[in-house]
Length: 484
Image (tube, rainbow, N blue to C red; front, side):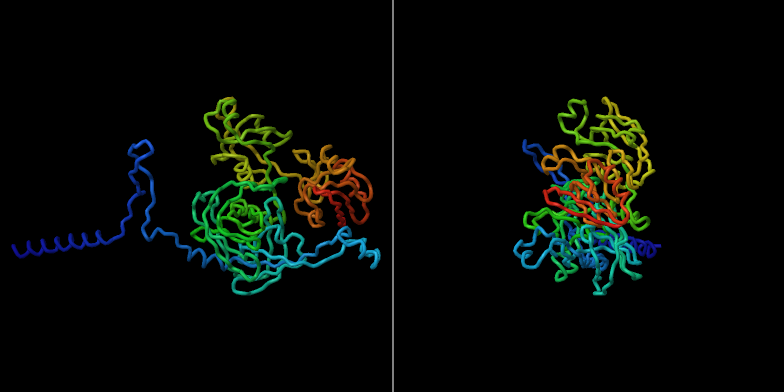
């Protein structure tokens, strides 16, 4: 009996020893680390900190090596028009009146793109391919393809181009709403041209829902991801990815006084890009949802006046007649605090959330009225698209653009008696002809116009082509022509 007991005790002791060794050598995974520190008043407080174990240092190798294969170099050729006003008058004196007409000049440009489908669909920036007569795409493995434009959306600066190829590498789309401030991200693209193709830089998410200086206009996205990853002009259209290698944004712009990177770069969130890409591939244009309000961010003064419990949300400054908001019962001075449960902090967050819906989609809007929290269900409407169709904001659709009667102040500043303002270019014949936002249309087919309906009527009467003359926002003359 004693020998059996001895054996059992030996086995038990061995097991306990082995367990102790494993426990001592296994990596520890404590719960969220907490440090005990003293505050400014000398009180002892607990402060949440981070685990700086070696395994928790950021490792970008997987994300970089996998994502870079799906980021491409995009080279474009555009035909620029050189207006007569820029030609030396003495040059014209010697060489004649042929320079009374715009001269064509070929220019090269470049950017980046991200393969989003293995059958050749590539997302890039609208400003990269706008006006391009030829587009060439170079993959990371040096394969080259000619590309065609499938659709563009100037409002979000997103475009889809396609190459004839199969089984291409892609980047899975992540969730830009889940990004956290301070989270590491990678920017992948071709800064400053082909010489630096497939460059990878790292930074952190330094802000979300960011508006950029001077980035205004109809439907313009104002909900950028701001990062400090080094980005230069050739990065436009390239990928912003997280540590998992998921696409979280499309790099779009920098804020710089020199034209080169100076610490701030901006990307369109992938949650907006995803829906735009789907619409452009399926329909060739974006089916944009409209809520139909003008709004402002809540500040302390407004919060005090309206007796709000916190300084958050947006207040409705105006509800447009016939809009989805009016039909749902929203009113001026209502404060929107959530859409489908997602917290609303400012106007940018409203734009970003609404951009994720299609016309006809419904959403639950949480708002505060007279100190009480209430809910309504809104069914989003579509923007006007047919020529001459009037939108809820009063603008008129015209070959992809949107027009409004120019204000007396604008006309006076430009020295015009009458005219029609281009408030949005959109995608269509106006954009293809070179129209710019803020321009004032003065004549259509040699006839003066004073309201959007005049522009539509004169264009309808044209037999073959529409010729437009006007003044841009900088006071320079412009001329647009396109066939009906």
